[in-house]
Image 1 (cartoon, each protein chain N blue to C red):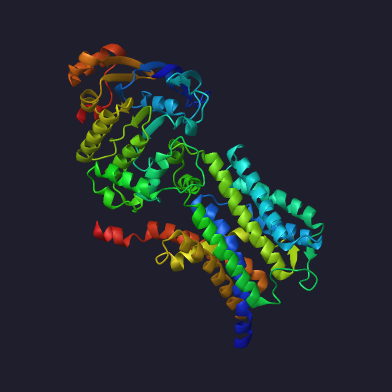
Image 2 (image 1 turned 90 degrees about the vertical axis):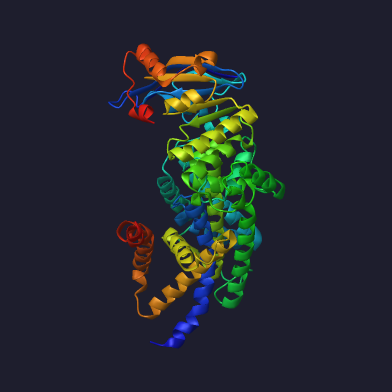
Length: 298
Length: 264
């Protein structure tokens, strides 16, 4: 095992982690703020990239392409939101339906299962050929995103979203249209995920129909890692978002390390699922079987 | 001011669990009326409040406030007119949000939520003064999460929030039932003060007959989805628990079945 190989791989893992950090911030909004596990993101994590790459291949400006990717993601979130609130389908199932539908839509957008875009021919914002630059640009995106979200969740509308996720009965009693806030939250979340997808497809130089597979699990992993490691330290909302982004970076660093230790890439998703399952079950198991503190004092 | 006309509600219709919760309830409240509602379990007390608040659509009948027909409006639109405190202290507040954020949320009840600040500096001072009137020291904990408060503190806060923006109607659904007697008395005191101060039209459900007699200017007893007693003014002020029980037996033809109401 060659330690320099690992060290050489770390900057790339950081850049990739940062891009997925944006995605994880999107997941944070549904999973933590709105208290919905939204599986739409497995689809939107491809839609954003597909839209961005196809538009750029057709000569559209990169910023406009990013904006369109964002809007496409918000549309996907809107569909899930309508299925959930107007049609009364449980959120998790609504997300699965949209995700499945998006597979066909993504294929339609891409025209095939994979579309490459070369940084030499197109003015991409970031590329894995220029990793430090890619990491810097993504970090700037994250900073701007955190600033906007911090502002938004301090507004009347943002507060009503948080109240909806916290206590739906209370929110309605306070005159908040919880159907509207849930749809809005899903739109914001999926828009952010699609933006991350657009950046990621530029970074890797292609959009692929499978690039979103298991995205929700990676997003959750980042949210959980961020919370476990920085939860005690970061109480402020902006810092909690930062923790999520850092969680994604750490996730990719760990992945890089286990790959270096000889893990077969085919087993990666199994490992991710296991890690997330363990972390998700820890709070429950701890409260159920390890109530030492409570029992001791009582 | 509030007019409830012939409300019907059946839960799980057509199944083995079918429950006729409200069977044609009608009730008219004047401005400033403070009505206490008693009745055994399953009498339809909470169902009546939920029908007024619009938690679900009713099967028949209508609800008016100030002549406005609320019946077709969803819960969040009715909130403009109605302040509510629930039996469960967890239900009336957002536990993960600060005390002042919770208050700011209810101060905007019935208003459009825009991209203005969720809470302003001027508001904070108002809330601080309002919290101080509760005498619970909450004014020093404006940025504490509500989840850290005790049940009694949460109920007092919810009550304050319900009245921050003067509601046309205040609905109290056994809001002291989950509290210990001492705390319950405190919250009831605060209730009396807030209702009197803002001259709020109020419906208060209670399990406790003594409380039902001691508070408000009108008393309603429900049984099997109907209002079977309606006592007001002079007659109410002379009521005793014993007299109330006799009246109940006469009106319903049954013995009052809730131990909780007798023992407390």
